Amino acid sequence: MKTLIFGAGNLLLSDEGFGVHCLRYLQDHFIFPDSVELYDGGTLGIMVTHKFEEAEQVFILDTVDAEGEPGDVFCFDRDDIMLSRLPVKLSPHQIGIQEMLLISEMRGFCPDRLTLFGVIPDSLEAGHELSSTLCNSLEQVAGRLVEELRASGVVVRERALAA
Image (cartoon, rainbow, N blue to C red; front, side, top):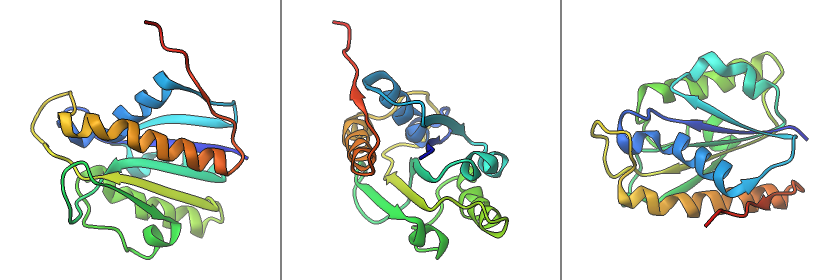
């Protein structure tokens, strides 16, 4: 089964780049089989519809504007996304996710399994590093995603980190 892990976000706005930072965390800490593609979608939005259409299982990593505290993690499934049950869109790149999936669905290529892991940001100030709050969320989101992958039969191994 082809799986896409899609990191979204703007690396120039601190926590807004969470999805891309989380993708890098996954690359640094885990080894994935060839059937799993880790893709830095940045702020491309609708420009990468083809990536979603190539996969049967998609995980999106991003920030969300939801009720709660900075660092809170939310998980939304395909129905939540397609039926507009997501919190308010946070940034311009998110404009494309629902529209992109609708286009894919109309073309008959929408992935069967779709999950969005969203985290509430602490800072959207200019800067290329995550706030300490969201740095602490990286391991939690990565762990939940790896659990989901393993539950679906994907073999994910932990990477030995150099000391």
